[in-house]
Length: 228
Image (cartoon, rainbow, N blue to C red; front, side, top):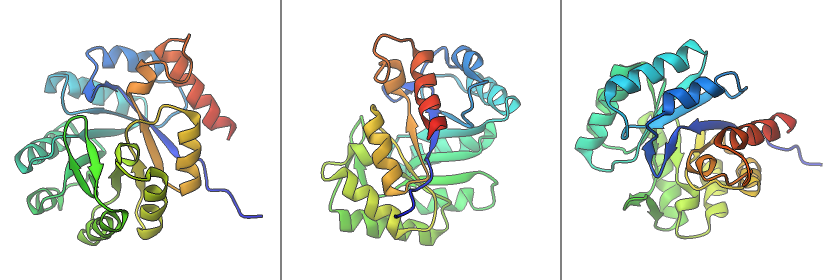
């Protein structure tokens, strides 16, 4: 019997509609003891000072911290990279890769997981052939990035096939980000062998426990992952 892939890591994003929620710090404080190590938010929605307090609280609780930048221009990507470094985050996710961003981050301790493929619009859409996205993922790996932020379920084609092929093509962690709003999709992420996945809006929209609260939805997924 083929061995199952390990359960992917959940990154809880305190974001809704691609923005950090105003009460992100309060929500984190209520859930900081949940056995989920990875927590993040977007570069929009909160002033930098409040983001800094959120990062400090996450780190004090022993969490690994993520900033996802969904802006797609070079200038916005650089601004997001600088913000992530200044706030002391562990991982920068997103941005379209540009040589200037790679050069800026080269001597920094932060890890960088850019978007592979052609990403556009807001909310983000990923298009193009699977072959082109796989080739771009390999190109990014060759530049020395630490991981990839794949918009699997924002893809205009066969999302599951895309995920499988990108995971198989690279040797760095891959995070499946965006539109994971069911246990079935988490199973697909696991079967493809992705390192991790993000959930943000689906928790706020009670996709997992429709009659429950935000906290109930987070706990439902955390418990499901713990059970394996």
